[in-house]
Amino acid sequence: MDRPLTEVERNVLSAMLDRPFPGAPQLRAQLATARVVGQCHCGCPTVDLAVDVTLPTAVVDSRIPVEAAVPDGGLILFVEEGRLSSLEYYHLAEDPPPYFPAPDQLRFT
Image (cartoon, rainbow, N blue to C red; front, side):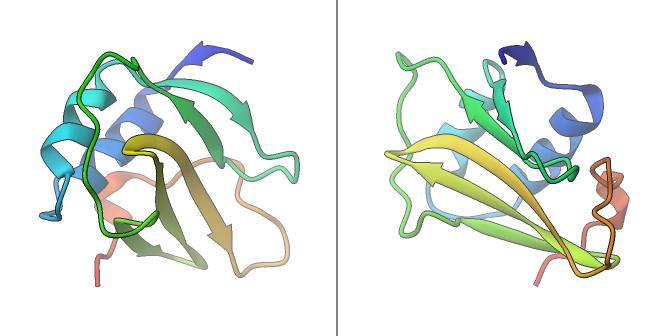
């Protein structure tokens, strides 16, 4: 799989990267080149990401720089070696949601 981000995926990532945390400016720059290179097989919208490797990497304290709660679950942004690597949607409902929620549904803690 190798495809561009959908509008919803891009908007959700952008909303998460608007949060203040170390490395956010570099990750925001990477968002412009982010592509989906894999997807979860359970039916949820979790995606694996790849970005332009020539862009600066982010210095982050954790592989999880930002999280957001959503109805019946949450979103976790993963970073590996300073690059966007995955946007996970974990769900608490029995059936996984097929799409990411709208950015206005994200609740940051």
